[in-house]
Amino acid sequence: QVQLVESGGGLVAAGGSLRLSCAASGRFLSTYDVLWYRQAPGKEREFVARIYSSGGTTLYADSVKGRFTISRDNAKNTIYLQINSLRPEDTAIYYCNARRLPYSANNYWGPGTQVTVSS
Image (tube, rainbow, N blue to C red; front, side, top):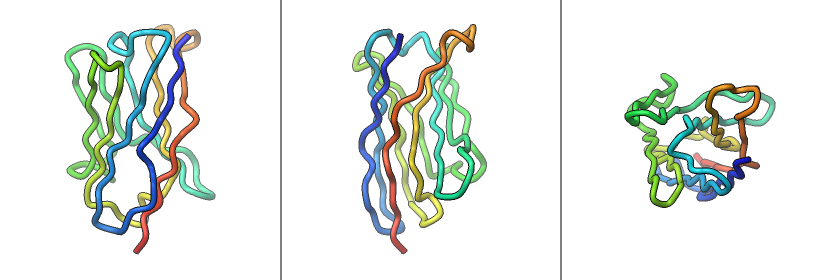
């Protein structure tokens, strides 16, 4: 079992920055791919960024490329999402997800952290 807890969300003005954290307990995150998703009011949950367990390769949604950076600190068992140049449309609950094969048995979610961007 992996327990995930997100933090770092809040209210920020457009153009500002936040760093979200996803802290894990129970297992070492270094063996998991970790993804960030977000869900805005009235919309479906959408993929934001992914960092792979091997080599640290990253992947981003087109809407956040160049503004968001995902990184991991294995010593702290924590994944970060640095969010710059925030826009009102980035307002959402941000969730982290840890997964590894087989996904049916190794797929964990945190409760989320709210990010609100004022215009």
